[in-house]
Length: 346
Image 1 (tube, rainbow, N blue to C red):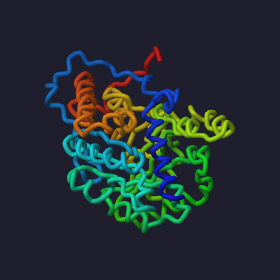
Image 2 (image 1 turned 90 degrees about the vertical axis):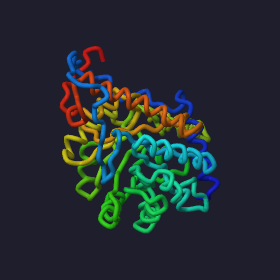
Image 3 (image 1 turned 30 degrees about the vertical axis):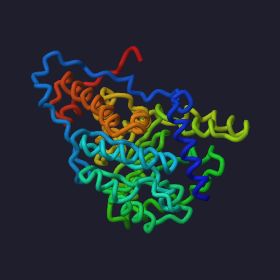
Image 4 (image 1 turned 45 degrees about the vertical axis):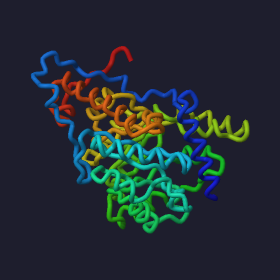
């Protein structure tokens, strides 16, 4: 696929995701099924609640990840710079969007060592698709992706549904697990596997961890639906009808998180997929997440400035802190033990 085709596709994706009426799944994330038991006497000072997290040797000020997002080359450069600057000021993690364009063409999308210079202290994750692993990608491309931005880890994203409904998508997924195992065994940084909005089952997560994967991002249903995005891009009514049937497909984020944590009790987990606010961040941590990611929710801010991105996440951080306060949780370890109830009204 040539550079212009790839860039056009990324621009289409960005335009559609910016309009939630065209891209958001009608499936619930599942977080509304849970409510925290309110603690009316927290015996805490709000300002002293500790939100620090440690992942892959990096200390984060809050357990938040700016999840992978992308667009055409011109817009991606500005988006990535704004995200990195905000992440550095906030002390949170950042995952870049797919580096396929940068790896296969002359366009770097702002994904160079300058990104690390802007954000020297953050947990930074490189990224490309698992489908490329059976189309020639291997350790060389993985190392290039990591070195390109001096990343701490590499995300390999799983998007079989999107590829199946996308015109010209990668249909052959035979050998992907074995390729992931070889990558995890040969790369000098941790390999993280994430879905892109359809969730990961406990069975698949266990297979991945047994193959050497260091962390899982469940990226469940309830946020952006890439089947719905591809339906919007479809060139024919046939393609549109096929894709639309899968707009609400997937494992809801909360359910995916629970089943993956049960299957992989000692594996670092990232919860993403439709996370709306800091209260849902708190619920995700209580259900087993080590980090919580958000992408589409901050995309509009990322188009404007790093200050807008920072302001967006400061709201989430304040919400998370208050959720800790009102459950009597002095830190994230305590939050993971906070009483969580089934919501009788959900």
